[in-house]
Length: 474
Ligand SMILES: *Cc1c(COP(=O)(O)O)cnc(C)c1O
Image (tube, rainbow, N blue to C red):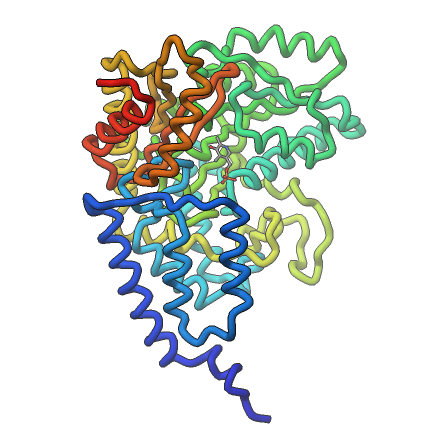
């Protein structure tokens, strides 16, 4: 039987070269624009209009030119590489990972079992052991990469519960509870719901004015949960919180979990990489006390999303998470086969995203991440400095990380109404992209400085633009 023309396109090296080089040219031109003074970040369009555009595109005749499609997507996406990008906590990935992405797609070696993902499983083992040691975890620590922090938190919480149940067999799920700061990421609550528990089983610990967990409130909350017949099986520390970038005192949390024999989980999805900076590593003091810890490579470590490390203090603990039979994949259910990572992850066929982080470490070393953190956290300090001395603005928090929340002060107008209006206008203008959060019922701009191409002068322009849109004079 002969190949059809269409099947031939799937494995034509000439086609790969022709459009591969052309795509790289297109991306390089886009990038030059994004980092020039003439940057533009957001081309806002209502969801219905966007849908109509792509419906028409989809209904068009067969597209012969991939470049035309590449251009359309580029034109209608957020320019995350623009100097004006300071929106959600997604990074402009290192350009080397554009290339490792191509390698990953080309190889498509699944990672669940060793025989399919040989290099990937070995690389993952090495990278995560290295990371665990940097966090101060003991020799027996290990982990794996999974698809995002939300899934990482869910996986770690499942392990924590399995660990508790293995020691307290017969405990009813309904009698369990988890403690976490009221500022925690929503994926924690969602994880508990997925685990068949309900909101009452999530004990939210209040925060201090700096948005870090009020550790002094722990004993009281823990005591009353016991009176109610609940067994707290896990305490979670935020390093840092999503809305305001606040780092919980991990040493104090570690002391509490040690004293009460509770699993200590650290959600370092965003703020873990501070560890690579001599200047900011102190924020993670105590991370080595964790029983489990997650860190997103796709937030502060220049890797395309999703790619998240889940680390365990004890490699064996991870095997408890999904105790089940899959003998067509692995023969020995109980042994610690590090090279069959599918035993411990949600994914069966798992992408080889380890390539990104492995290449960055091999080519540039961990110093790359330290420099990234220094620059972006430093930029946040500069922005806070500008806001602090400008009476037109109110700064919510002195930033510990690269997340800054503020608003225009506008007596006698209602600041919530005014600031909402300003954010809409800023988005319609499109030079900058920032987002918002609500704290204590009040509306704030939220800026995540994720792009190391953003300069202090850009931040001055951002504030001038906001003041202008608010009619706040100068
Ligand atoms: C972003 C974030 C998450 C969720 O991670 P995803 O990779 O977006 O799923 C969890 N916790 C914290 C603290 C985060 O900042």
